[in-house]
Length: 389
Image 1 (cartoon, rainbow, N blue to C red):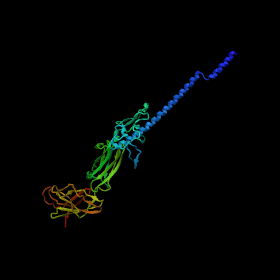
Image 2 (cartoon, rainbow, N blue to C red):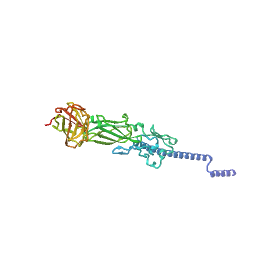
Image 3 (cartoon, rainbow, N blue to C red):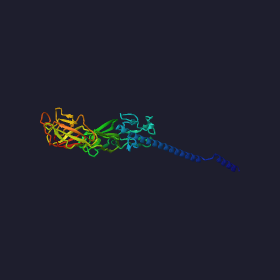
Image 4 (cartoon, helix red, strand yellow):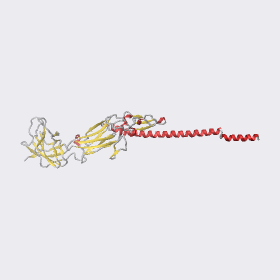
């Protein structure tokens, strides 16, 4: 009985103590595993959160460099960030927040950084971003676990060396030909922090090009172009051009009037007058818009002769001033510039045709000699003067 009683007491003690040492170790192991899982889950969640925050912030930084493509006007992108205003990438990432050029229009970083002058430079782990200007990327070390790299653009040249080309024509789709030197094309772009203007004339076929080929590289941006016709009725066309990275933009310009044929010769008005018949007079009709005549020149003449004066509506608008008379293909600049209203007739006189260009000479009779005259608007008239009755 004694042994039996002892056995009962011993079993009772076992029940009171609860678990064995092995069971306790198993419980501790399970708790450790659970804590490890929880820690790893929390760590993974925290890392993912920081990863997402950093990725989003880096995307915003890229937009700060090159603009937001979703900001458009009339279907054209108008936002190009720092590069679109400055014509270059910033030397340091600070340029996105602080002014470093005349045409700087920032800050370009998101609004949440406007009151935080350093936050945009630090990732979610508190480490500074690496900005590589030459290779065009922003990088985060990812808290030492994973490197995050986001490219700004594949090549700097895609941002700064684009092209704009096109043609200049009139309402009849005709190119300017010999009038091309009197058409000016101006493109205003940012360059190294300032605004600069490129200017050129179109070719005779109307073609023009702004590119690095002719030392006029075009950066990305929303740029102003002005094409001015500096003859006849002076006119300008203004256009804003949206230039995307790595692009060749086609920008054609068409004037609403004709480069030529505004003026028509009025039949039977071409006469030779004066005692020596060495002055000619003729009338033209303007069937287009009100026209300003800057100049004129004789493009064909059957006889060798040089004239001394030009008159418009009876008033002198050019004189050789006893120096050099005007002859074939001599462009004579008129002053004051004649103005011919729309649907009206005007008279011109070319006076004093002589056989020498300078000095003394003999009068040249102008009857029966075909003459062609081109005006500054491009109009060309032809007639054969007859003796004035």
